[in-house]
Image (cartoon, protein in one colour):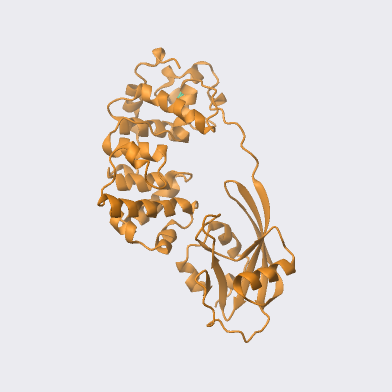
Length: 359
Ligand code: SF4
């Protein structure tokens, strides 16, 4: 790492940031709670999308006490569409810890923040530096890209083992205004040093940038390909009865853990496999009545090719009132609005007649 030709990097960046920072709602407040909520939402989600979610979430859960008291379904409903529901679940767990063990006060340094559920090095660094001005790095994808280009460094940014190296680069420039510096790096990555077309001519740090000087900034960062995603054929079972539809809670610890969804059978589309599922999981005897829509959903590590199959009870006189299973609900179209349904399943709604016709 060579820093000799980079004296003045932080000052140039901060000067630019002071004049060009976007006016984002979470930048108007400096409470650790607000920073935390925005940072968790911004993981894997675009700023423009997060703005409305953030405003709604803060109106509903304005502080850590309100969040710690909230029911899981209430929080998931507010999170609906952002995906990666484990983020919301970890936030609720962290809120409980802060209220029940820390008297409602956020930890004030990065190491203590790291002990909370769902808070990794990036989020801990962002909260500690922005809320408390602790001189610690907050290295996200934007910062990795900027630093890899500024230093023309060929390390694989997808390899977590290289995170330390990039954190050290950031620390080599860390000024007194640590929170602003971290945000300025992210802002530069989001607005100027963009992945495909960095605006180098208008970049405030081009005089320090080796990638620019070498004429090949977009050769960086290096990101080696990850293992291929696994592909699954997923039978989505739609069981309708008396104007309602059966939904089940997804098993804890798996994909979309704890959320409500349609019953599914993985990688097995035979009617026998489906009937077995209904009997063994729900205790129902059913009959297949047709084939519905298809949709594809890409998760982080897998791809679901979904196909809807319609089922009815074999005995049309069967009632719903006998059912007593906390993991199963019979819901009307209206009831569905109160449930947080994962985007993967929502993609099928348009093609399912239950959602098209009035019920
Ligand atoms: S000069 Fe270009 S590559 Fe270097 S930091 Fe600025 S925008 Fe990124």
